[in-house]
Amino acid sequence: MSSEPGKTKFQIDLRAHLREQNISDNLVHLICEIAEASKYVINAVRTGDLGVAGTSNLYGEEQLALDVLSDRIMRKRLIHSGVVCNIASEEMEEIYQVTSNPQGMFSVAYDPLDGSSLVDVNLAVGTIVGIYQGCDLLQPGRKMVGAMYILYGPRVSLVYSIGKGVYEFTMNQLMEFTLTREDVQMKPSGDIYAPGGLRKKYTEENDRFIRHLEDKGSKLRYSGGFVPDINQVLMKGKGIFMYPALTDSPNGKLRLLFELNPMAYLIEQAGGAATNGKIPILDIVPDGLDQRAPVYIGSREDVEKAGEFLDGHA
Ligand code: AHG
Ligand code: MN
Ligand code: MN
Ligand code: MN
Image 1 (cartoon, rainbow, N blue to C red):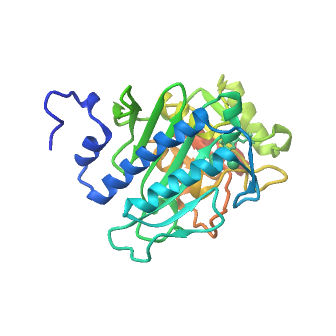
Image 2 (cartoon, rainbow, N blue to C red):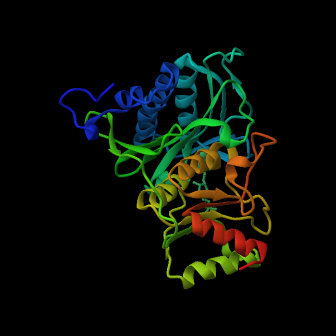
């Protein structure tokens, strides 16, 4: 099928684009439902209560009212989509089962509002989503059939992949997502670095790697929001984001199912790499919903260099 008559490919909307991708109607529907849900999440971010919820999440972290509200918005939309089997969220204690029949169904792992503590200082935040075929969520990320994030910045963008390259859509004045970039590709090496975690808790190897990046002239670009920080690396097509093991948290901070796998999928699709310093993030076999991992993600050679420093070979 070709684009709608009279429209250039850069006016094409998300649904029309997805229909050209030779994927199941259910997957088209699911991605469009997530895109619709994001419009309510933005509304919550823009106008909602900035206070705490008084509850804690899967990780025992204090939830903000916006974390809880964004989670409800996403969950409700997924439940009613009719194409979802299991749902897992950073903000839920356990898997929510919608149906036990995997036929034609997808399971979804998401971070409803990444960077929620940045909303009160008006920095960019986002929603991160990983999509699996069938009902099993505890699989290596490489089994995903799609991944996406929605970035709530000065503009709202949706970046997705279903294993056929990375596409960016941007919300227009009618609140439709229209194609703005296709086949996003990363350069092998870059000059941007985004390092998470307290430097004084870095191991000697990680500290040396940072000094290497500084020596090579990389610019520090870290906002504290994973979605905008990854979006910068991906859209500029170069650089590295890292959140290493810390002396008091050997698995770092970021969550495998809800944050790392979807981003690793997108970055690999763009020709970049994502590892925990040893193996690709997408090859880690999760042993629980709440698994964390150290991460080095971005331009391929920069990620490989991190591995060399960790091995003591650099
Ligand atoms: P969340 O808001 O979903 O809990 O995640 C916050 C994450 C992520 O957005 C960011 O990369 C990281 O925490 C920042 O951590 P530091 O403040 O330790 O740098
Ligand atoms: Mn997050
Ligand atoms: Mn979150
Ligand atoms: Mn949180």
